[in-house]
Image (cartoon, rainbow, N blue to C red; front, side, top):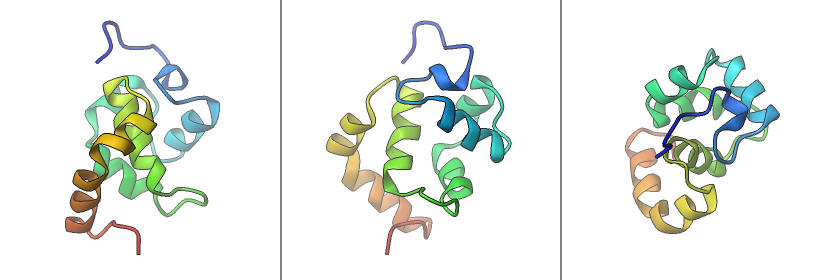
Length: 92
């Protein structure tokens, strides 16, 4: 977790200006709003957008926990895929 949350979405771990644009498109305009939404609910909102794949959920969780998306993918892939499957959001 962050000792002090960043002020802008682009300052979250693994995010940048493009991530901030994507989040804004789905109504997430602040770090507080990003931290308040369930990561799987957010993934469901951005998944239909062009270029949004499985790495997106890893990046969302990584940004929330201040970890690299690669670390999330490596250590929690099965858990995340199972949850996505339960929600009908798993890749086909």
